Amino acid sequence: MIRSGVIACLLLLLLAAAPARAGDPPRPAEQTMVLIVGHDSPIVHLDVIDVRKLFLGLTVMSSGRQLRALDNRSDAKLREAFLQNVIAMPERAYERRLLSITLQQGAHRPEAFEATAALLNAVATDPSAVSIAWAADVATDRRIRVLRVLWRD
Image 1 (cartoon, rainbow, N blue to C red):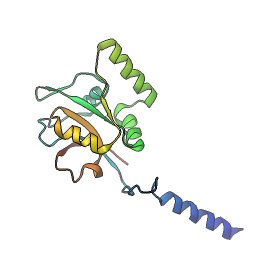
Image 2: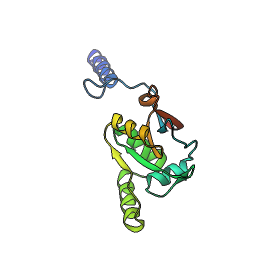
Image 3: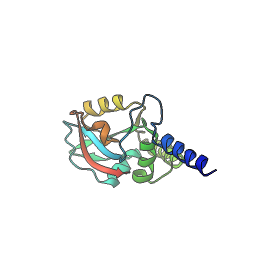
Image 4: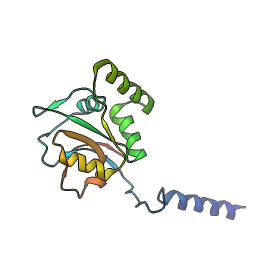
């Protein structure tokens, strides 16, 4: 009886350590969500309040430019951490708020990206674009600059 319990525990540990999907590279144990801009962007600083306003569709200016939020939806854990720690709303409330601001004030919803590569290309080519990503996903991309750390696992 004890032997089967030990074996079951070992199997659970092995399953927990396996990547989420076959073919996916394993993520590092600690994940860091960062705020990113293009390498040539004139944006040098954004505080968390401005980031929140930007992703809610409100107008945020920096270096004489109106900033544009790009919504990274490539990873469920990143999305959850973003909504919880930056936006401070659950998904449903965030979507309602975006709809409300869009209808009442004519604000623009952040453009959504399902693939990290497409998001990084858009950020790299638009000096007013701002987004979030895992630090590991942008660490070697010289076209992208990290403005600040937003959250650590």
